[in-house]
Amino acid sequence: MESWEDLKKECAGCRSCPLCEGRHNLVFGVGNESADLMLIGEGPGEQEDLQGLPFVGPAGKLLDSMLEMIDLDRSKVYIANMVKCRPPHNRDPQGTEMAACRSWLERQIALVNPKLIVCLGRISATALIREDFRITREHGIWFDIGDRRILATFHPSALLRDPSKRPEAFMDLREIRKEYRALHSADKI
Ligand code: SF4
Image (cartoon, rainbow, N blue to C red; front, side):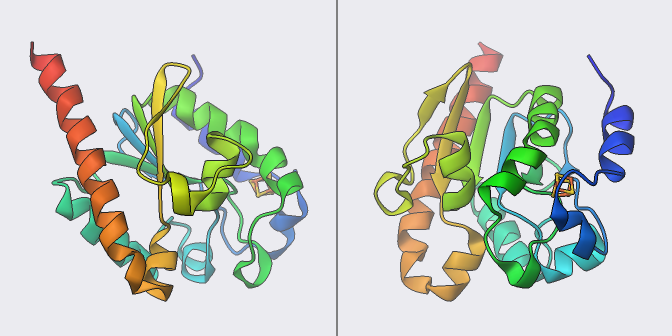
């Protein structure tokens, strides 16, 4: 198994897609490197690009509150994105960019080895669950893929843009907490 150090060093110099041209910082990922729960968003925004960290700024604050609601925090989860460099003007990452970046994410997932993955938003859900995934209809549902359970919920930025989605996101969070707790009570048996 490769080391985190080697992976981070190798990824830091990546120029495999045109997104490298506009980046201030590559946003690798952050959190507990052996977490049971991994959160995967789409790509860095402006603040993330400037700070080199995922989910900072208003969407990051909301994500922190969401984690707090289910008795978690950043020390207990690992957070990464589908692409590690900021798409211009915060547009969605394109398929070719996600394909170029995919191996970094796969290697992160292999190292963290989480039992649960939560996709934050449609983009990561279509990449990790199913190409035609419909976030409005299928959020909050666990899908068994390989030896992991994967669920998608709304991206915190979407919840900031449209607060009417928050009650549904809250139900998703309850589902995540239920599964996370079940995992840990099973460990104690
Ligand atoms: S987005 Fe991913 S593949 Fe593209 S340059 Fe950045 S790290 Fe490399």
